Amino acid sequence: MRAYTIWLFAILLVLSACSATSNSEESPPDDSEKAETNSDQTAEDEEDQDEGKAKEEDEPKENDDEQEETKSEQKDPEYKMTDNYYIEPIDDADPNVVLLTIDDAPEDHAVEMAKKLKEMDAGAIFYINKMFVDQDGGKEKVKKLHDMGFPLGNHTDTHPNLSDLSEKEQREELAPVYDQIEDITGDPVKFFRAPHGVNTDVSTQMAEKRDALVMNWSYGYDFKPGYQDADKLTDIMLQPDPPGLLRDGAILLMHDRDWTNKALEDIVKGLRDQGYKILDPSLLKTP
Ligand SMILES: [Zn+2]
Image (cartoon, rainbow, N blue to C red):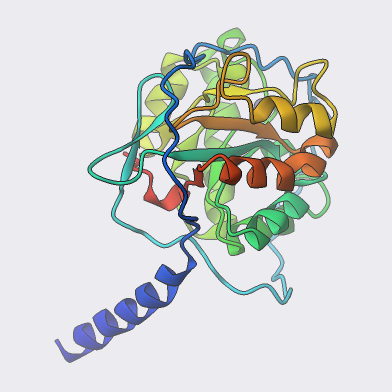
């Protein structure tokens, strides 16, 4: 009993220390209810990514970087995701939030993007492809993202269109990613995003089994021709009306890309200038 009490006290201490890192900026609520959602947007026509996959399963190396440990803590959920992939308050939380998500990680830019976000006290979910984790240094990158406090989601092994695959092939694309991330981080994977937004019965059932939230997005542009430029991307991501589609609760899709990395700080600043708060993903309800 005494050990239990001490343990509880330690947890309370940790929680009170972490509560100081909330990312809110007080600003007036946005009045936009105008933009039509674009939740069925599934044409994430990124270039195919079938780079060679390294085979070895190295043990994750300890990373002795100086970054402080801010692993995501379990918090009472204040927000939930709607069926058309927006975020809304469960109770009386501020509705003027947006959720940042970074897909196809960790290739060349994810760790740098995470550092910028952390510097700005902005949360995000990074969606992981195992083919990148299997590259040199990939596991260390995943560990860094996790240690900086960013939740990680399963984005499959090789980024296929799951609807083109047999059930067995789909399971082989999905299960090892859940397991690998959990092995590296020690935490279960709470989020799943299908490549190109194409979910299948198999991927949905597997996510349910793993208690992972299936998440597409409200809008994104960095994979589309014409927006692979930091200035153009920043501009469109901050547009409240179509074709931008920024509004309360939007889930913003971005990728591990050079131009997105360059635009990231301006996008976060621009969102906050418009009165949006960047959602701390640990406040989002998962199954
Ligand atoms: Zn993707």
